[in-house]
Length: 59
Image (tube, rainbow, N blue to C red):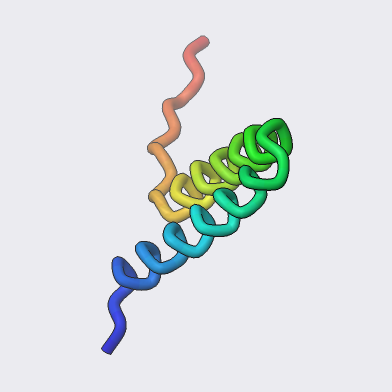
């Protein structure tokens, strides 16, 4: 059975190979794409975390 970790590693490798291909064509485009993909990766990783407990507002 394929674990979640193996799927994440495969996804990262796939994205890096695609980013390398774009980098061979245009370095500025690869930098912009890398920034966008990095932001998406952080948002995806934070979406799986449980929400922080809320504190009640004081008077």
